[in-house]
Each structure stands twice: as structure tokens, then as C-alpha cells.
Length: 338
Ligand code: PEP
Ligand code: MN
Image (cartoon, rainbow, N blue to C red; front, side):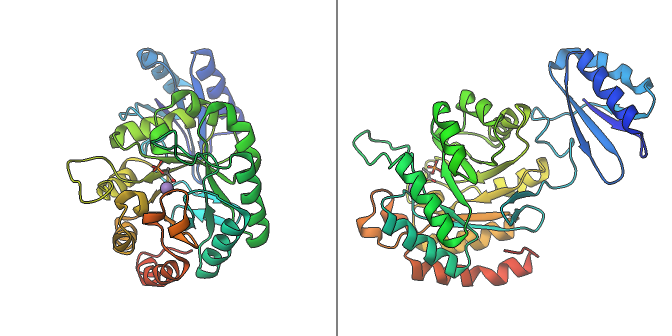
């Protein structure tokens, strides 16, 4: 339920309502807007009749149900788009993230070269996996802590904030020490123990859509993080499995437009994993911007032929430079700033 406070309700009135929500066994999540405060009361749906009584409390204007199953993530709860700040980068409401870098961190030379190149072309964040989720246990699994240290060096060298994947709950503290954004990969989107733990950290979370998950399930996973206390979630469309076998996945760009209608959270697109086809990355970036995406994430490797993971889909620095130039008019048209 949403408790809508009157415009100009006092701090004491708001605090009193928060206390009453707690007394009734719900978690209060206030959003202080320019004009008024609204408080989401999150908890067991069955007791919502109790919350309706709050309409008679001083300072309350209305009590309304949130119809969507994802409550805190919904536009009903917050009509304004959420903007997530990572260092000096703003994501959402016109702020655009251009995230680029290799699939995996492989060596100091590789990550520093990649970081310098993507920075030069205009990327505002660096990606690179230190913990890698691989289909085969025999494939390169990532440099782990050493990879995180190398990412920190690349950040120091270029000033680019880093996005890196968190694979398991036991590594949350370690990865949080290094990452500016922690990525939850497609294979982990419904690892609820991990999502709950990420709700307790201060770091923003990039939540990738599971390859077999619906849009509603994706937003329910975001809800796990939000309801556990972390309000900074960036969603990522990265393609889903379908009968189509000409591409690695089927990039569902309609999800971007629909999620923006349903949720205030920013959403970016990963056309690299979404298609697995280099020649489709530029057109899909342009289409993502037209669909309303708040960013794109692209794999870039200084030497794809020697890459330890996903080399076949990585752009080389010159190709990334071309891509970064090619999307500029589209960003301008949509009123987005890098
Ligand atoms: C990645 O970003 O390198 C990755 C493993 O992505 P996904 O989880 O979308 O497959
Ligand atoms: Mn990859």
C-alpha cells in the first residue's frame, strides 16, 4: 500500500505514520518528493485492510494499493525516474552510461590497454569480470581477487568507475571493496540469497535479466534488492533464449520500453551478449537508445583473438571508437547526455 501524505505534512506527522506502519508489522519506505512525501508500506499483502485505517491519521491524504506485484520497483510507488549516480556518472532521466571493456580481466596489460582505449572513445564506465560464470568448468574462471586489484589499477589510471560481476554471496564484501557497480549476471538473476545480501550493501547493482526470465520476474528480482534496503538498482536487458538460433540470444528491446512504463528504475542494454554478433552491436545500440535505454554495455578487447572468454563477440578499440561516434546523434535526438 502507498500512504500519500498531504502536501506540507510536517516531519512529525510523517514520522508518526512511519511508526504506525511499523506497529502494524510493515516496513515503511518513504520517498520525499518535491511536493509531498509518499510512504510505501511493504509486507504481507493479507493485512492490507489494517493499513487502510491510516487514512484517518493527521497529515495523511490517501491510502492506495499498489497493484503490481513488484511494489518498490513500480511507477505506482514512484512516478519520477530514479537516477543512479556512480562517481560523476548519472544513469537515468537523461543520464546515459556507456559501459565498455573486456568480458574478463586477464592481465594488467590487457585491462589497462582496454581501459585507456574505451576512455579515449568516450566510455564513462569500465567493465571486466574477475569472477566469471562459465558454462564449462574447464573454461577460464577469472582472476578473482587479482582481477579486482587490476580493475582498481585501471580505475586509478583512467578515472573510470568499474562494473564487475558478483557470483556468490560469500564474495559480496570482497567485491564491494573494489567495485563501483556490482553486476548480477543472467545466470544469477534468481539467486535470492545473493539478491538479499546485495540489498544490504551501499554499492549500486546492475541486475541482468535472466535468459529464461520474464520481465515481471526481472522486476521481482529487483524487488528483492530494494526491499532488503538497497535503492540503487540498474536493470539490464541482455537477451533471452528463444527458438531463434541465428544469434546467441534474442535481444528483447520491447522490454526496455515496457520496463520504463512499469518501473522508475533505469535500464540499460547489453547488445554484445544479446546478439553475440559483432555486426549487430551498433544497430542494436541505436535501437536501444530509441527504445529509451539509459545506457549500453559493450565488450571491447585489445586483442580478441587471444581473449580467454567471449573473444568472438568483442569489438577492438577502433571498432568501439566508431560505435561511440555513431551513437552520438541518436543520444542527442533522445536528449541523453554521456
Ligand atoms: C558478462 O557480462 O560477461 C556476462 C557473463 O553476462 P550475462 O550474465 O548476461 O551472460
Ligand atoms: Mn562476456
